[in-house]
Image (cartoon, rainbow, N blue to C red):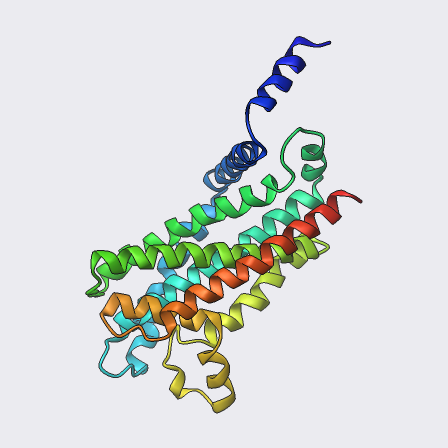
Length: 271
């Protein structure tokens, strides 16, 4: 018997399945992160797209939107921050579809790695990308007049909720990536889901300016609660119910989408 095979078998027995799941996921996450650093399109979206979007709303639309006692730039930051996290998660859909279409998954099936590590690796890489994008949004906001009053605890809560929201939306995107039949479909599927959710929310305008039906939807959808919680922590306003509702929505979405994505992936690999 091959000596290397014997050593590998002994090494596997030394560690639990959880250890190998984490190890394999980390390896595949690094693979996806390398794709980000070597792909000019993804670098553009990570670095320049959030800057352009923020400046567009700040200086083109800012003078025409009344946000009451809070300045528009202070109102806007939370909306752009959450919007960029939501749009960034669409890469999960696209990258999963690309791997499936190009046969990369079939190669992984021949390796002794945890099956779900491929999904976790992509979602983990997108979490890194989104945290970089979110940091850029916050950094640029200071340059255009943003004046937060958040305490250190508030910033910690913002980071935790932002990361949790990124994971939730990425797992939804993973489900869509496993359902679509082509790379072209992956490009627009995430967009038609995320786009209305971000704009029919409190991201860019107060919801009380919307027609009744839209206002009811906007006030009760998850992005609005996430945006309102982050905005309240940033500007020192009362958080109200949005704080726990934002966390509840994110945890609920993850609890549903993770097993669904895992089941869809197993069905894909059994074909």
